[in-house]
Image 1 (cartoon, one colour):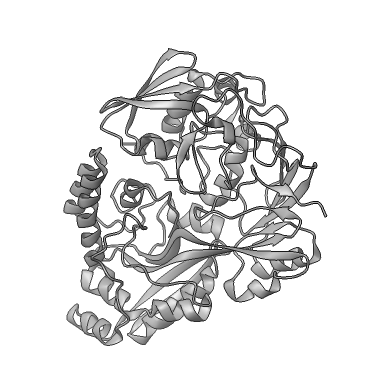
Image 2 (cartoon, one colour; image 1 turned 90 degrees about the vertical axis):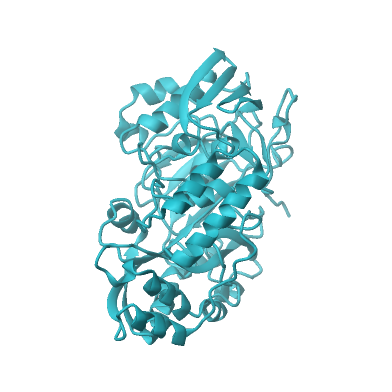
Length: 510
C-alpha cells in the first residue's frame, strides 16, 4: 500500500450557514467589519503549497484551509458540520453518500462538482511523493458519481473515521491540477476557500487576500501576510513594535513580554503530544524493551514542565488524548534507581552513547526540552548528545527518509479521533518513525478500524494502549500548551487543535 504522511491535525467558529438545509452562508464577522490587513508570524516556513505534498502539518494546514475548502468542517469544539457537503449518510458498511453544495466556484473559475471530489481523492492517492493520508486513512477504493452534486465514496473496509478524515482533506479544481506542471502547483495554489493566493517567496512572506466571491461570504480580514521567524524572541520583538498582529509558540515564561498596552496573551491547552521517538534498530541498546522503559523512568517530566513551561506541562500516561485514553494507565513515575536497575538487567550497567535530534522553532522550547531530557538520561548513564536541526532539514532529510535516527523530539497533533491516534503507532503509518512493530497491537488496531460501534472500538484501543505503554516506543512527555501573542486590535480566539483560523476574526475599531 502506498505510504502517505498523515496530516495532521488544526477555526474560531464554523460558517453559520453551512448547516444542513440552509440556502446561503455568511462568514462570522464579515458583516459590518472594516477592511483590514494583518501580519502573522510562525516559527517555520512551508515546504510547498501543493495540498497533497505539504509536510509541516499544522503550520502548512493553517495556510491551506484558508485557500481550500473541505467536504466537512471541524469546529473549534471539534464537532463535524457540513462545508462543501451539505449532508452525508452511511449507505452500507463500505459506502458513504455525500450531497454537495451547488453554489461553489474555485477562484480560477472552475465550478465545484462531484468530479472535483473524485479527482482530489485520486490525486492524493496517486500523486508521486504524496504525503496526504486521507485515502489511506479511509481505505479509499473508488468514487461513484451519481450526478453533479451527489457522490458515493466506496472503501475497502468499514471506515468509521471517514468524515473526520475528510475534515482535514482539501478539495482542488480538477482541470487546473491536472493540466498545470507540478513545480507551478507547488507555488501557485488554487482553491475555493475564503482566501485566494497572492504571492509567496521561499524563505519570505506568503500573502493571501479575501475571496470576495466566496460562497460563504467574504471574510472581514482582507489581507493576511504570513512570515516565518524561527526565534521566539524575534517574534516577540516584532509584536512589541506593533509590526505584526499574531505570533505563535510564545514561551510560557515570556508571556509577560506580550501582555502590554498593544498586545495580549491568548492561551489554550492543546492536543499535541510531545514525545521522544525511539528508533528501534537491531543491535542497538534501545532495541531492548527494558532500555526503553529505563528511559521513561529516567526523565523527570513534571519537573521539566515546572522549570521550562511554568507548570504548563504534565506527563501523560498514554499517547491517546482524552476522551480516548485508557483510564487504567498512569504516567511513568520518575525513578532513576529503577532506570539504572533496568539498564543493568539489560546488560548496560555503564550506559551507552546515543544521539538525540531535535527541531528548532517547531514546538514550544523544543531545543531546551530536548536538552533537559538529555540531562536526565545522562544521570542514569545514557550519554545523550543533543543535535539541533532546523525543521525543514529535520523533516525532509531525517524523518521522512528515516536517516540518522536514534532518538528525537517531535510532536503529533490530533483531531481527537481515536483511530487517527492509534494509527500513529502502526507499521504502515507514514510518520511511524520508531519502526516498532507488535503483532497484537496491529491486530487490535485493524479490528478497531473496522468496528463501527464506538464503545467496542474504544475497548479494543484500550488494550492496544496498554501494549504500547509496556513496550515504550516513545519516551512519553507532555501535551503542548499553546501561547499566542495577539495585537489588541485583532479579534481572534485560539483553538485546542492549533488551527489558526481567521474566518471569524475581525479588526477592533476604537
